Amino acid sequence: MNDNDAFNHAAQQLIDAGRFIDRKGWVPATSGNFSVRLPNGTIAITVSGKHKGQLELNDIMLIDAEANSLDGKKPSAETVLHTSLYKHYSDIQSILHPHSLSATLISKLFKTEVVLENYELLKAFAGITTHEARIVIPVFENDQDIPRLAKQVDAYLLTHADCYAYIIAGHGLYTWGRTVSDTLRYLEALDFLFTCELSLHGVKI
Image 1: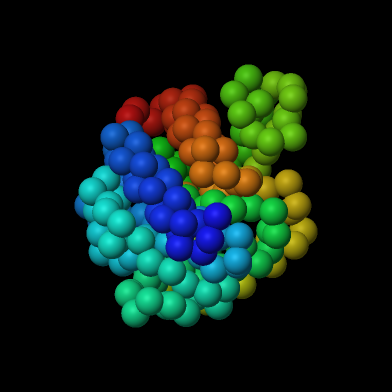
Image 2 (image 1 turned 90 degrees about the vertical axis):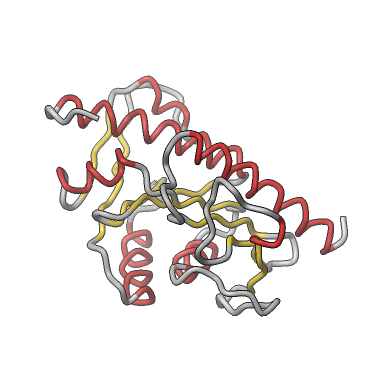
């Protein structure tokens, strides 16, 4: 597959993911951003300000590993959060960032981390084979200084190798995987598990 074909394939995956995520109600208005790392190291990512349920090919742009636009289009202000994760994890190919209600609410309930344990659905995550498991989703304060936020996230990940996702407080969720389908599976599992935790603490959605 040449570079152009690889980009078009990745773009279609992001378009399809956007429609799926929009049907779930996880990307209201023009919120969220999604990306796929291509074999040549460049990154296909959604442009800024587009409704993720109505994406077209022209709404996917190309950036390099330092978050520089390669085609003149404008990426999201949060693009550095994507490139930072790709630098940290050499084996991931996809990052999805929706603004789901469950992730937003749970960050108001738990200020520093969300602990998920002893749920059957934890087996949706790579490497987990039993419900007798525990994962921690860190919560970071929202920050308009995105490079500074990216450094905070990276510092956390350096000491927590088993992290599957993180939440920006009052904002949304970032999760990543080896493929777009893996990452979508993580989103579905996290939304369900966050809803369980919210319900246990008396929060109605």
